[in-house]
Length: 148
Image (tube, rainbow, N blue to C red):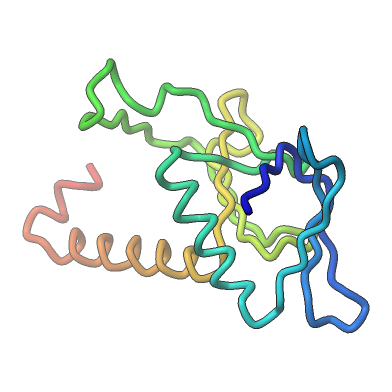
């Protein structure tokens, strides 16, 4: 039987530290608690992240709620075109709210500030990808031209 959760209200670790308890509510079910066994928590999170990927980007606001970013990331109506912007500043920090996320904030403390919340594994993949791409560019014959 499927249930529909319309709002996530809380999360906490069970007293015996064997389950994560997510509190929420639904239109027809009222308040509900989901208990996710510790050993399958990563699989549960992976399933949610995968599902989120099919819906589009979602970020975590400073208040902890999910927000859908402005549709300005794509130019026009072409789904194969992506608009790139060079950030003036950026910040990377560990989430201090206990959600176990790495926060990447572009244009930190500027009016057009935007951020992304990444799992530690995803943050390592991004860091490795950035390092590999930077090394490739710096090793290319045109590397001297890049920094002019």
